[in-house]
Image (cartoon, rainbow, N blue to C red):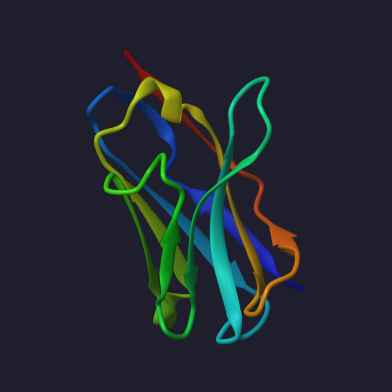
Length: 119
């Protein structure tokens, strides 16, 4: 049974930084992609970034490119999202999710962690 547990959210002032973690368990993830998504109040969930477990290839939404960095520690089965230069519009619940390499839906989701950026 796959489990994803996010942590690291909180309240930060604009311009500050946070690092989110997503601890994954339940299977070997070498053929999977881990993604970060976010959902702000009244808005649809949006993609933030993803990384492949094996090769470490990354991809970012334009809105976070240059400010956020996704990385993984395969030994710990943990994916991180380092968020710098935070803006009030980054305020959202952040979720990690996992899918197989090659496309398709994200099959498993974490419970989310709140990030609030004050102006």
